[in-house]
Image (cartoon, rainbow, N blue to C red; front, side, top):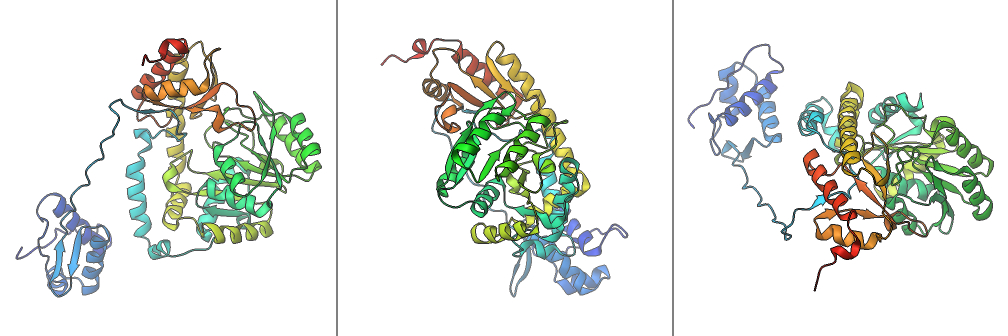
Length: 462
């Protein structure tokens, strides 16, 4: 186009951002079209009565947002959008409802898409924006460690920042912690039904697992003490709040007893507090009761979104922090800096708590749907959790149910994925991955229908 001048209002923010926003507005409204050539920087600076640097910064910001592109020797042009990718069509003709992936629901009230986009824009518009695109310390950047300590304060109290690390997700954290604490063939105590990701780490590191029996309150202390005497474990892994998969939450007295036994036998505790931020009320984490022997992992994957890939780890002391940072450096190097900065902003300005509250409310609503759909069946769940543990009716083998569920368009997880030893006839049902409540209601109704039949009656005739 021969000429373009942005509509700039005085006093509405930094001049370069005002120009960039005006450019974005004119592209959205069609005043500027893909391929249009923009005026030279000097011409536009003179026309607007600003210095050349301001226009250059504005064009750089627009280019960062993907709005324009520069062509050496020819100038700047409105970017032609890339052709959209064609969606891959599923092969199956039946709809698949995911009751297997244990992720938080993403309700509209959480405004995750909007908050991620605006949050990243804000982070990248900050004076030190480029630092979030560079390599950083394997323990996490200092501001992110401070934000993590502040976010954890309401649950575990004041923690020195030197004991807090920012790591790229709980799975990376667990791998690094166990590699720091244990060696090949060492014994790790775990729940008789335990998180599959932990089992994968133990297998990769050649650790021996000793199972601890569970009841409705989680770990049975006497079983843990027996394992300590029999197997001489170096560490204990536990999910004390909304255990995955059984959903049990250890009461305070049980946590104190587990900590007492661990200290007595020289066992370190690895506390996976993935769900600790979800309940409105919960006992204090074990790290608050036994900070000298506990490695605490608090991920944002279950209370916000797994897309952040951010977890905060609290170690017993600064020496262990340094050892853990060295292990992270050798494996995953660092947490994603841009996502860590976004998580820090959310932790400090209250956004993270708002997102968690929306997810908590949605999880509670979905648990109500589950209680109605599965009425009369034998299951347990936390009222603010993402999943439930369903014991199958007599005569229903879990393997056969998995086949029928898959043929009906349902994804479920049988107990084999969690069991250390003999697996009970049970499944974990996750409530968060379904796109909305109606889809979840339909999927749970289908599961209830399957379980109401005799397995033989559902067998296909060949």
